Length: 81
Image 1 (cartoon, helix red, strand yellow):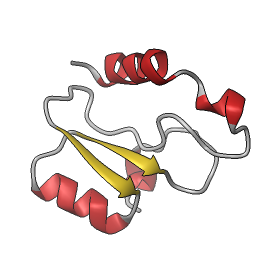
Image 2: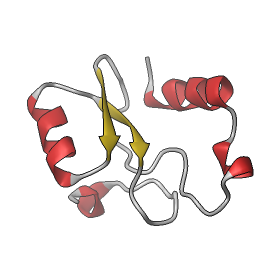
Image 3: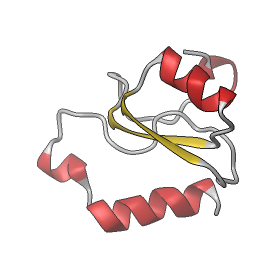
Image 4: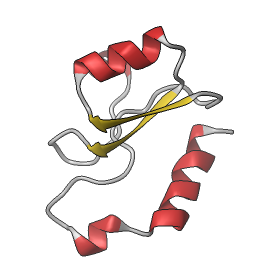
């Protein structure tokens, strides 16, 4: 599935958490591969989780505790955390 389809599915499935928790960054934070075949999960976003996910072939990560900055997708040279 495409990354945009995954984001839309999760938004539809879980609702907009930003309405309930406006002080927390929710949604897509780091834009990765455009096609998602392998989805890894973790509790908290961290460099170690990103590296482990990449090493295990994950195309995307789904976490409970995201990164602590505004929820704008990061891409390109800024994507190394």
